Image (cartoon, rainbow, N blue to C red; front, side, top):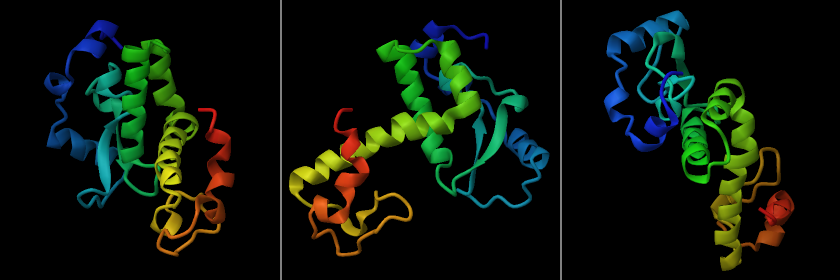
Length: 167
């Protein structure tokens, strides 16, 4: 991409953020997005600046917030990949760029979302309850609306994330 690992890992992206309103409008036009209420979309980088991406219009697209996973979740993937490259050193910059450009959703589902589910499970299982509405149960499961006054075992949470105990 033209930016070194040293720059990616040590320099802020603030000075490289240069997507103008005109560029954003061009991206919406290019992708035939006629209506874009505030918060519904984010003009996002296929390869984010924090992984050495550019502000070139070919690297931009209108990513919706909903349905999830949307741009909020992709932002978490960007941070996790940056951490893998710069802190954990478990992935090269080239690998991270390729992954986010081609299959960020799989990475989100396998790494980022499961890590979040494990943290939630640990927090709530130590209290012996689950959050109101069992908000982290998978779609189609028996979601509870008991206000969170049930045990993790009764809610089905153990069956959903029990295999995550080894993470």
